[in-house]
Structures are given as structure tokens and as C-alpha cells.
Image (cartoon, rainbow, N blue to C red; front, top):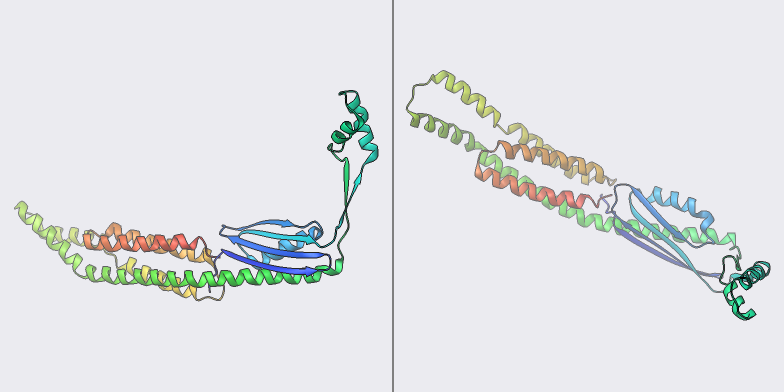
Amino acid sequence: MIQSMTGYGKSTLQLESGNITIEIKSLNSKSIDLNTRITSSVRPKELFIRKHLSDKLKRGKIEFLLYKESSTNKKNSLLNSDLINNYIDQLRGIVDGSAVELLKIAVKMPDAIITEQVEENESEWPVIFNKIENAIKEIIKYRKDEGLVLEKDFIKRINKIKELLLTVEEIDSSRIEHIRSRIKNEINKLKIDHDSNRFEQEMIYYLEKIDITEERVRLENHLSYFISSLENENSNGKKLGFISQEIGREVNTIGSKANNSEMQKAVIQMKDELEKIKEQLLNVL
């Protein structure tokens, strides 16, 4: 079963120290492209979280957000008195102003205010990780639901290409004879003597060049392989992409050999369906 790379998962948690919100968003990407924004109290676990997300989500442009709304004031702000006094002394030598005015300027200078972060209780981490797992399960479910929609669309378009291939086969049954007759008529119109044996040899050589039997067989096999790959347990968008390239190669060859307007029309319709498949494959995990 295929999965989309597009997904969204969210999980919330209420702790004594505050409310935790976890969000995971995913879009398509050639590889794993992970961006994390994590509250400072959980940041020591960031490397572990990144590896866990990479293992679970495989591919995609992924944005992971974990933020906390504290129920109590966990930050203590302290004035750096020595540094502030030093700033004031330096400012007095540059500008005139009252002590209050100089103080207002000094407290805005770098490191004038020190913020102390009280460490969170380590016992909260297992509960937080459990909620991260819930958010991952949500995004995977979202991806599977999106993948089911994509799968139905792929099957519909592959079946359409199969129908067009049957049309090509029907046209091909009379195409060769029509081309042979047309060439003979053109030769006869010239009213010149020619070696009939040499003519037949050249005719056979030319008709072999435009024969599409091999391409038809390959195309049919590629279409069947695409469908069977959709039914695999694991999603593999890259593999499906390779198969679609092979389908395109056979369709293009049939088009170059067609020498028939009706067959060319069928080939153009095949290409149109295949382009829509390729476009959607960019979003398959």
C-alpha cells in the first residue's frame, strides 16, 4: 500500500508544569528534510527525536514543532548589576543624562538581564515521548489515507493506458498491410522498371523497422508491474517512478514508429495519462 508524503499529526498533553503541544507537518521531498522547533526544556532530547522521526517517516519535508505553555513562571530574570554599572559609567562619558535615563539605556544593552531557566522534571519525558508517538501515528494514518486516493487514481490511469494499448494493437493489425499497399501504389505511379525481389527485400527491411510488437509486449509488462508494485506492503515511490520512466520509453518508441495518424492520437493520450501519473508520483513516499 502506497503512502503520500503529505500529512499532518497533532497531540496535546497537560502536565503540572504546563501544556505541551506537538505538531508534525509533512510535504513531498526527494529525501528526508527535517526541521525541528523544540521547547528549551526538551531540547536535550532533540537528536533522539530527529532520529526517531527519520526512522518512522522515511522521506519528506518534515516540520516538527514541540512547544510548551507554562502554568507557572519557570523563568527567573536577574539584573547583571556589575555589568549595568559599567555600562552607565561608559555612557556618562559619551552623553549627558540623569541616572534614570542612563539606566534605561543600560538595561537594554547585551547581557544586562540574565534569564535563568529552571530545568524540567526528567520524569515527564516518557509521557511526552508517548505523545510524540501518537502524533507520528496520526501523520502516518493521514499519509495512508492520502495514499489510498493516489492509488485509485493510478489504477484508473494505468487501466486507461491499457485500453489505449488495445486500440494500438487493433490499429497495428491493419497498419502494416496499409503501409505496404501505399508504398506499392506510389512505386506503380512512377511507372518505372524495378527489381521485384530487391523491392520485397527493402520492403521487409522497412516494415521490420516500424514493427512495434516488442514495444507492445514490454509496455504491457511494465503496466502490469506497476499495478503489482502498488499492491506491495511497503510504499516505494522511487520504484514506481522508475517503472513510469520505462513505460514512457516504450510509449515514445511506439509513437516514433507509428506512421499512422490514429495510432499517434492513441500515443498522445497515453502520454497525457502518464504525465499525470508522474506528477502524482512526486508525492508518493
